[in-house]
Image (cartoon, rainbow, N blue to C red; front, side, top):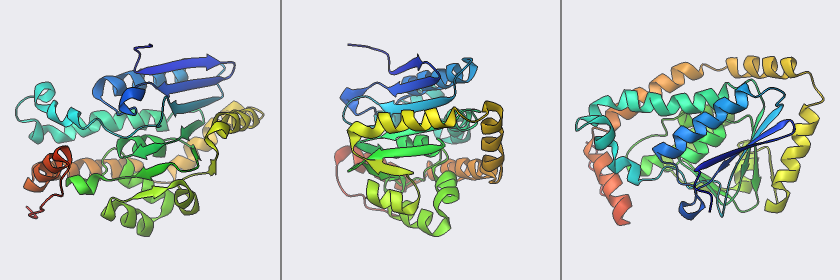
Length: 264
């Protein structure tokens, strides 16, 4: 069994990044994020690449953050980690921002589940294809926090404030068909067709001039003030992480019970 948490492979002019923790539904932990960041850097520095494909091994793209990561924050950042949330958020935001700012087209191939941090990863990609039946969502408000790794900002850019508020306020999951109708997904198809469809699109993109594609991406992404949105996310999360509601939400999630919100 391959013990790499993230596998990267070059196939001609395609660079493929695979989340490889299938036994945990590719739940993202710090080690996995570090390896993912390194894979993105390799994609950007490899000559001749025209597109980056990102997918998950096993039954799901990714179920989101490994919740046990929250239990290790004190070990990694010290006993007063809650007062350092701006730094913690900045570090993870930086990984997905570097993904977004690759001057290469990025295509997410999503199946099974794409929740929370995983959906934030997918939102940082240029194009999203999903298998029929995939479940997507940003459930953070049900933990007493917000999507703070670009989810709030990038979802709003993609679908507009009204729909972003509905999905984030409720923390609900949606199926792939609804996500396509909202404009979150470019297309929905049978799971077995995902890779073929992505490769066909990559081949079509490769017929265009690489510098023009990269510059078009920079211009389109530059139309939104992503940096300000990320700063607001980090500020809001640093405040929410200090609340009783966050502790209640995290504990309730781990215990699989409904939280009792106090509003403080």
